[in-house]
Image 1 (spheres, helix red, strand yellow):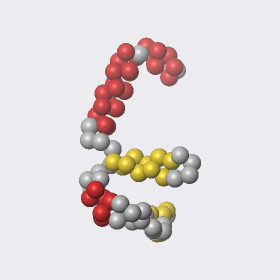
Image 2 (cartoon, one colour; image 1 turned 90 degrees about the vertical axis):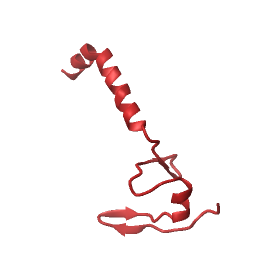
Image 3 (cartoon, one colour; image 1 turned 180 degrees about the horizontal axis):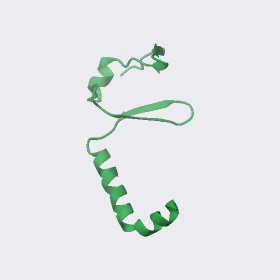
Image 4 (cartoon, rainbow, N blue to C red; image 1 turned 30 degrees about the horizontal axis):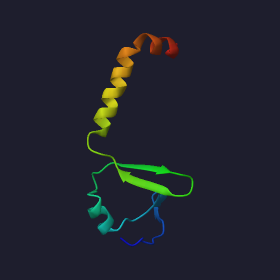
Length: 77
């Protein structure tokens, strides 16, 4: 797929970018898809968050909190 060229557009108090439908279809992204946005200091990387990632993260956090409850409570004081 050829690189697309675009410019930022005013969007509320910020800026937005319109992503061509061909890119969205290729990545199976729709308006309900959560996206992760990162940078390497020179470019933006936008990628869909895999289904279930949020649940896995929540479960991992819960396990850490359960395993280290006393320590986390001491740190919170």
